[in-house]
Length: 145
Image 1 (cartoon, rainbow, N blue to C red):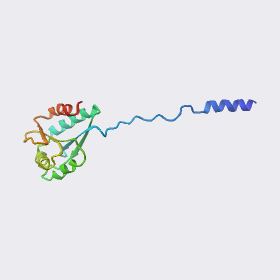
Image 2 (cartoon, one colour):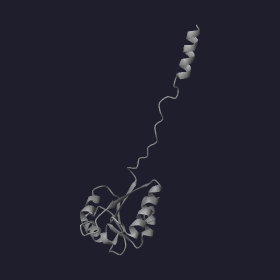
Image 3 (tube, rainbow, N blue to C red):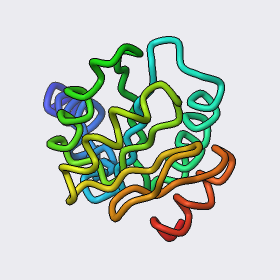
């Protein structure tokens, strides 16, 4: 009888009543606004500030901010063409050296929205900000953050 009592106590003590492990929360970011910054490898001061603005917007949880590097030479066009196909809601360009390639691709890829910081001619799908500090306000207007 004592063996049964000890066995029963051992079963009760060693039994795991916690049930299945709780599922870790998952954030689905697939539906977020996707902003893609393109800069040179060194990045201008303006592109660094733009990246900081995009990261601040992403901290709110409704924006996915991504950064891509393109060459400063005249061969940046293929990099912008590649971004047209990856699903960026807006391609942000703040390095003046990249603006010609961005506007050239924008003229052909009318479905893609471009946001250029600096002095350039706006177009149907190219919006221009005079200063990278305006970027957070632009994001807030378009994301509703």
